[in-house]
Each structure stands twice: as C-alpha cells, then as structure tokens.
Image 1: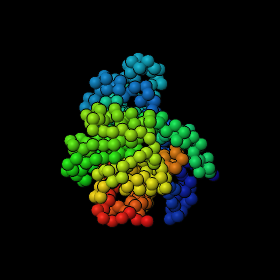
Image 2: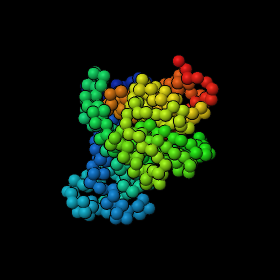
Image 3: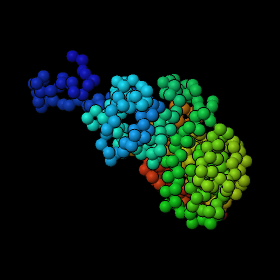
Image 4: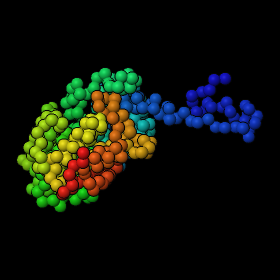
Length: 369
C-alpha cells in the first residue's frame, strides 16, 4: 500500500495494522515540505493584497489592531471595485497566514499588517515585498542556473530597474539599523567625519552618520538610476547640502586615497562574489585614513546555515538573480578584512537579523600582501 503525503493519513505503521506495538514507529511529518510548497502561493497572496490596496483600504477605514474587525468582504470589494467572493477568499487566506484579523465574517488589521503592510506603517515593507525575491522568472529556472553557473536573466542586464525598488523598500529598515549601530560604534562622538558610502542605495549609513554629526560630510555612490534615490532621501532628511553624489560603478569610480574617516559597504558584498567583495574591501582600505573605520553590513551565514536561515536564503536570492552573487559567511568576511590589513574586527547586530562588521585601518601597519 502506497504511503500518503498527508500527515493525518499516515496510518500504515499503527499497532492496529501491524499488531506489534513494540515495533511501531511514527513517520516524520511532511509539514516542512508542504510549507515550502505553500510558500509560492503565500507570496502571491500577499502581493495581490498589496496590489489591490487591501491593507491601505482597511487603514483608511480606521481599522487598527485595537478595534475589533468590522469591515465585511462585500463592503471592501465595493470600495476596491473587485469581485466580492474572490476578495473574500483572498482575505480569508491572508487571515490564515496571520496577516489580517477575521472575526465573525469581518476583517481588520492586526499588529503585523498595521506596522509592515500599510503604506504609512511604522516600518512599512509594502514596496519591498513584490521585489524582495528578485526576478521571479529566475526562480522558475533555478535548476538551469545551477547547471550553467549563472542565471539566464541576471539583474546586471538592467541593474537600475532591479535595485531601485529594492533600495526603496529596504530603506526604512536599513536606516534604523544604521542609526541603532551608533549605540555600539559611537560614530556620533566624532567631530567632523568624512564618509564614503559605496553602493549606497538610499544612503542609510551616510544619512545616519550625517544626522548624528552636524559637521560631517559624505560622498555617496551608486549607479545612475539608483543614486537618485539617495539624493531624494538625503534631501528628505535635511543632509543633502553636505553630500557629494558620485554616480558610477563602485569598482571603478575615482576615490581619494586616505581621504575618509568612515567607509560604508552596506549589503553590497554578497552581490559581488569573493573576488568582487575582496576588491571592495581593498578599495575601502585605500580610501580610509589611518584609524579610519570600515562599516560592512550584510546577511552573514553562520557556520551551520540552519542557524541563520534568513541570511542563507537572502544569499540564495542573490545567486538566483545575479552573475556573481552568493551567500557570504561571517568567517569568510573576517578573513577578507584581515587579509586587507584591517584590525579590531567587531561583529554587531544593531537590530534583529541585521549584522555589520566594523574594522579599523591601523595607524602604522602596512596592508598585507
């Protein structure tokens, strides 16, 4: 008799069938497999909810986690101009996933939805969710990528279109991490640091330092089509007048030798592969003054990947989407920093699951080999 993939139907080894209780064993649950299978649908359920404006519509109606749900699917469907029975199925599924509240046929926001899924949420991820996995077609052909050693449609073919919405979506989280990092790094104690932010995206690291140090200045770099995001965010935070924007490839742009007190590499090394990451670290060394510090933030994989699942999967996203991207480990990164000549390495976690190495260029030691 063939076994069943459904945990509740696994009856082939119960005592009633084999008659030998002392040899009975419980098969492993198939729940982890079903969780992965359901992941694709769960992602698209959330994307559809965001695209249709479900969360914002509930917010506009005054729905908050402190108020019992009171909006029906029919009422919301009329407002959103969609099919009521289809919307009800979507809302029920979002409630099952823990992304909405449902009580007595009415729907409302829970704490998660209010904070992360409304456009004006305190830590909104609304613009991040659709772009976070990278080009979806690359996932459909992941086996081909592994066979060939590169994705069929790497984001390098049109990097601005990929990175622009990604840095927009991650800016709030990255700025919070960069700001909280000061509690451990105390860059706010510096008088007038000069900052170099390579591959800055929305420039969260530069903005955090500039806001903490009124006399600081920054050189901000990213690709044409992405650096405009940094220009807008620095203006919104009132620090644009102390910034120079330097568009171009961070591997080749001109950088002044020993001209900076802080160099930031924020979530760029895992996109570059070992050689590219090491080259960026070497460029940071050359750019820093003696006693200057490198801030290298990324999703570092632990010695056993299952200890850091988020980091492992974020690295896999880069492998599926880019020519050179791979997961990087904390141990690898430490070796790269030491090989470049950096000392006083320190790994910090400013906020949950956000890590950064800080490393210092010594006063007298020469760069290694």
